Length: 171
Image (cartoon, rainbow, N blue to C red; front, side):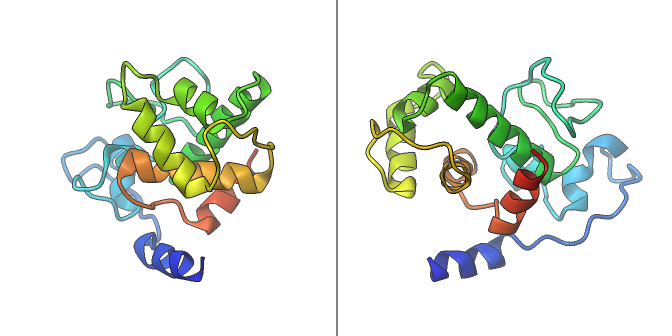
């Protein structure tokens, strides 16, 4: 766990946000990922401040970008709002009775958009549980799930424990 924390601290360090005035060819509202040190080479979920790649909906998420330039996925004004939305989405699914990794991921990443069985295996490996074990809705469980989803969705660990804490405190 110490190695993961050390690696996380190195990989997820971001510069302090700067105001984006739009001079980079991106509209001011959507250059926000550049303000956090992200570039077009970063995964789409990270550029959108949406590490869970939540699909665009009419849900009035807190911190949702006023204008969305991504045709499919939500965009948030900063990473903590995207992580907060992911946490809220998982909590909602738990409250609907989806309390195993298998049930959660089948809801979150349906087969017609993802290789759901591989997704489930990856999350189970990261969380350290079998796919059909009933999970408790705790902060620790949510953190493990959020970090596992981030790894699958973005191909890396972009959510630091500090970022998770900040997002969780906003619930």
